Length: 611
Image (cartoon, rainbow, N blue to C red; front, side, top):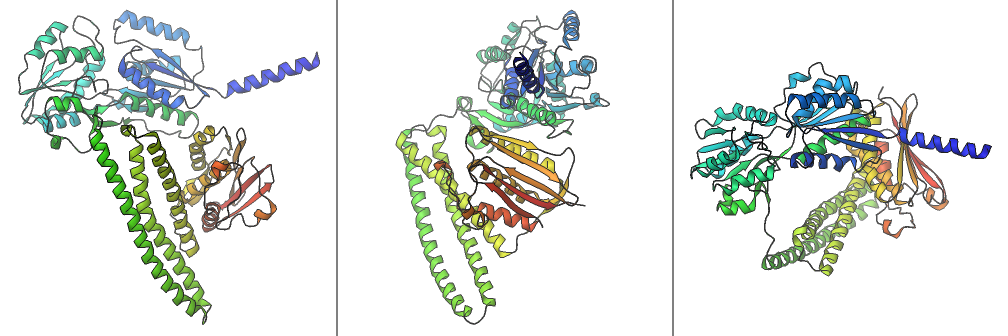
């Protein structure tokens, strides 16, 4: 009986402990499920949180596109008031204006002390956030100017623009943003607003447009009689009743009949605000910006460009073109021939370059060997010359290898689906091998600089704990893919250290990568930071195969490559730990290793504190 009771208590303890690590995020959508803009924001949010099982996401929909009465809002407020204490949330994401306004009005009553992260907010009045704690995020900010500039560039002869918009809350705010910009175009474009209509009037109005007109489509989800329109159906009605070109600034219109514009993406809005919330919850960034504009891309629809026979030279070079046709077999054939010629040319160039370098190297070595007989001091000069030549060789190798890597990657992209399986397998081998060679060349360059004694550091005083947290976080997906768990132990304080951030990234990522290389599935890697009075100590500990006594003394020497049981992880030239040692010592620190064969290894390095 006592043993059973102990087991039950232990299970309850484990369960409670597991739940205590969970985080709850409430996503309040302004509209209803099925509206493309809101669904794309939701997809962006889930693209982040689906990677973190410790985060539970709860979606709520205010449905304010289809319900606008005061009674509905009153009932909605009462509903949320009654449910506010059901779940303890760690963060709230408010998508679009209605949800943002709802949180401004009721956050402190319903969810006190819970941070709000907003996105998709049109015509954001930042003054509303004065005195409000815990509101961070991204405004929707459609780039009207970018879209109108594109319209003017592609169709300079079309001087009239019909702006179609509804009278919803979002529509009114978006139109205010647009009207603020219109004076810029007073000498080139003439605008007419069309925003109170029923469906019949809309069809009639667009059918009367002449060849000197274009349409700029804003929000269109309701007509004057309260009939709800989806984005897809709204643009379909316009497209079926006019032949003039249509422009827009949102992704839910792209691919449905508009030429394009400077596009605001719901997916980006959702992804970026979810990442902002995640970093805040897990204390990676507890001081985010209060206001930032969301990302946009200049995007065009190839099919519509062809429909209007638009000169491709009038299209900005940075534009993203969707619906491009696949390459013809003839084009693919000549591209393969071109790639083959390029590869052959690179290897021919490489061969002659290496032969010339070999001749120069032979002359230089003979000359230095003669001088070595007369002075030990000359030995240092020869060593330096060797490093210089190594650097030159590595630099010369990097460009042709980079070209091979880039062109092989190009051939592997989706648009080259016509490749046969055997050719795709061969090109994949070229791509993987060139990636490995690029890493090898970079290591050769690093080791030559370290050996030359002229390693330059760009040191800054930085919070070392926060820096290491971010770098460890980047390696978690790689470890998870190999079914390896990375655990971290950090002090609850800032530790100021002066170091070169790029070099220290190389150190911690090399040590974690090394631990992954020698770890088996299901094992644990631990990263720990501690401090003494005058130094900060970092360790990376694994449960791998350990290091034998024979290898222990030479672990930090160049070209030392330990055997690993995993054949797929044997790649490398044995320069990584030698480079790590050089970087640590250049910072005035030291590195050492503890290991037990077949039980694991622990690499430990110390850096002086910034006092």
